[in-house]
Length: 229
Image 1 (cartoon, rainbow, N blue to C red):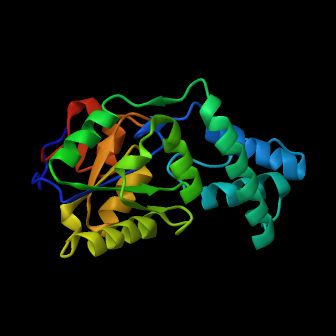
Image 2 (cartoon, rainbow, N blue to C red):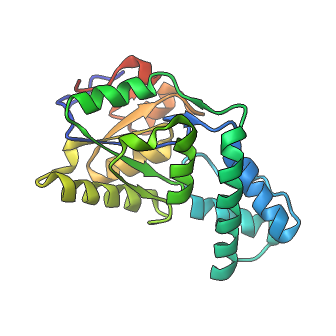
């Protein structure tokens, strides 16, 4: 973990979900594939057309353009989102690879005991984000959140999450908000808002890559503890 300032206890911590709190065992990828297959007869692989840390609207549109060679209409995206969410709800509960990542629940409980307010900031649509937390019963810990369904832009949705936190907290400056994620996209978006980025190398990126992306604090896993506690 880096020891960059500030290291004071945060007032609010926002968590990404995929590869930060949980690993879904490929449930999201399977569900996008099933949605494209049902609607268009093409079992599209989102991994070929998007990168980790992108929002669901970005993933859906990029994959649609790649496999159908045109832009989707609003109606087409609406049907695609619906099929994806329906399949995800069925798949997530039986995903053999699903697991809570090491240290996640322990860090959450430590933050709650310290009086820190917890929220979510996820590129997933709200329905998908909450569904992904259901098998681990983690939804109960998070008071609010901002999601890919609020904005396709990661920086904007992080700002929206901070604004929601300010409504709950009262006086709040961005540097009192720590945002935890596992990708360079998370680091970039957090730093652009003035909040404090906390990178966790629990996904596809190493600690070195997260530091290079501007992570203020970088952990090998949430088992390392949490800055400011």
